[in-house]
Length: 155
Image (cartoon, rainbow, N blue to C red; front, side, top):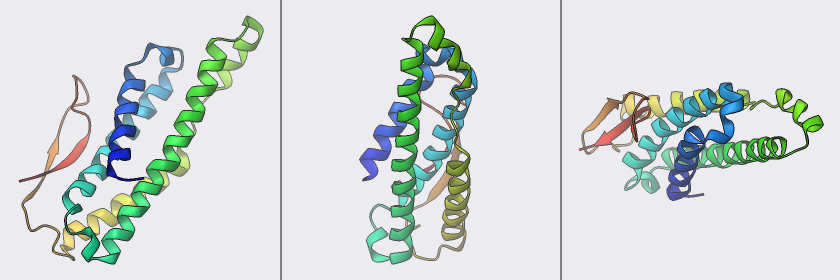
């Protein structure tokens, strides 16, 4: 899974958040919003390391771990969406079980926390001269179109 796949998954998350198909399970929409924000942060790291990551095995390892986490998370989210879709299109007797649908992202949250700590360490210590360009942390509100989360911008 390359950086483009991460971008595609982020776009999928944005579309799911906007989708009325998940209105019946609003708590999961909040989880998806939070997940998108966290992945945007990690995507920023992928962006600023793109040119020099292959020069440093530790950075490349972290990039691969981020990609793996996103791939696994995408599978979890897609499976959840399939279950929601089935529940929404099931008979009334089966629709009762929709109350039991929930998106379990606890393991993903733990992995993201670890990944963010590793990203922070690399950026704070500037260990691998990946910050040859100015890196600035920007904050966007989660309301409105397009801008969600905290991410890095390369100048």
